[in-house]
Image (cartoon, rainbow, N blue to C red):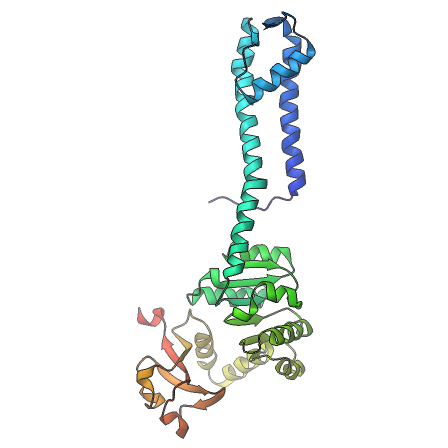
Length: 334
C-alpha cells in the first residue's frame, strides 16, 4: 500500500506544466538538430534551413517522418535513435494522457453522473458530512446499505472528497436551497439525515426538504434542547440530541454498570444485539407482538403512534404496523 494525496495543482496548472514539458523537449531537439544540421539532408533542394529544422523536428517528434529530410551522419542518426525516439514516445503519452484525463475522462464521468442523477431513486440523503454525518454514513454501510444509494451533500470540498472516497454519491452544494434538494430528487428518496453542524442550518434544511417532500422521513441532529420544538415544527420526523443522549448514558451508568453498554450495543451494528425496524409480515397479522419469531419485539408503530409490548393493543398486530425488535448480530451468532 502507498500513501495518496490529492494534487494541489489546479487543472489549468497541470495542463500548463504538461505543455511546458512538451515545449522544452521539442525545443531541445530543435537546438540539437540546428547545431548538427550538417548531418541532415534535404532531398528536395539540398539546403537545410531553420524552417526545415522546425519541420523535421515536429514530424520526427510526432510521427516517423516522410523521408524528405533524413539524417545521414552517424551522429544525427544516433541522436534520432537514442533521443528523438524516446521523446516521440513520451510526447505521445503526454498528449494521450492529457486528452484522457482532462477531456475523455471528464466527458465520460459527466455523462455517467447525469445518467445516475436522472435515475436516482430510493436513496438516502445525508446533509452534512461532519463528525456525526460521517459516522451515520459508516453505520449505514456497516448495516449493509449500498454506498451507491447514499447521497452526501456538503459545502466543504474536503468533506465531499472524504464521502466520495467511501463510495457515496456526492454533491458540493448548499442543502438549504430548493435547487440542491431537487437536483438529488428528494421526492424519490427513502430518507433524509440532517447533520449540518448548526441547529439553525439543520432546521432550515429540514424546512426546505419538508415542503418539497411532505411524506419524506427526516432525521435531524439538534444540539440545543430549545431547538427541538422548532425542528419538530419544521417537519422533522425524528430528532436526535447527542447531548441529551450522552446524559442518559452517563446517568444510567452511575448505578447500573451494564445499562450504558447495552444501549450502545443496541445503537450500533457492531454490538451483540441491535435494534431493527420492519413492516409487519402478512403471516403475523392478528398475532401478538411477543409471538414474533424473528426477534424480541419491543414496540409497535401504528399510524405514527408508539405502542409498547406491555400494552393491550400489542396483543394483535395489524396490517400497516411497523415492528421495532431486538435482533442478535453476527457477533452473538458467532
